[in-house]
Image 1 (spheres, rainbow, N blue to C red):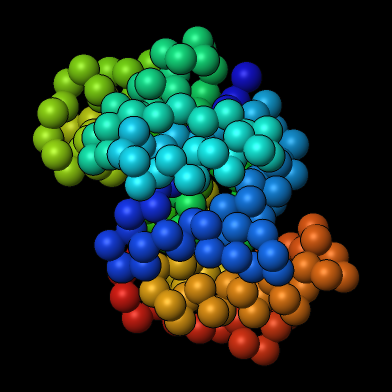
Image 2: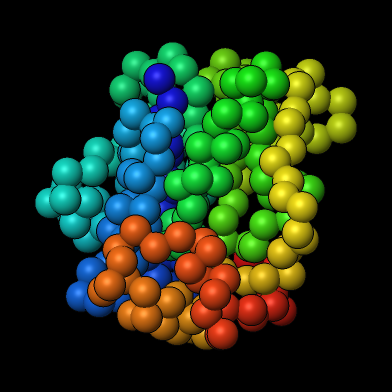
Length: 233
């Protein structure tokens, strides 16, 4: 069983509360979860948020739409992932997603899962050798690998960013990279700044009413979709 863990918090430093900002009358995170749930390989989408009071409204909202939430330390995001594993008794593979990617592509998620399984890898992603737009990021890994990382590292960077211990030089884990022929790495489809949110809002307002299951190709066909990254997301 492969489960997606979507990490989310309200206390973003650059755009606080962005995950609950409304688009077409729905919080942004709800639209992202709707997209992720179209994956054919995922058994469930779980949100890992913090025990900080600032995340109480997020957890309460997710409960109303039937999304399981596991809460843990605000800064130790790796610890949150381990809490998801322990709380739900998971034994399969995990997909790591972040709540600043509301245009997540279920087909890319499935392709990354397939790469991990078919290649026999411990870790697979499309973000280290980036050819996809920033905002379609996916990481998939064996639960046992993440558990080992949690035991081996107390470095704040590793604990905040969850997976660096799995792929840094000298890692004991095998790694696969999902790439596409066209390099779209300069494109910015993620949400860190107000301009990013306005871009995503415009995408949804243009495509979602006629086709809630719009694809990345539908986004690519929009004349305003070709915006390049000017900051790190």
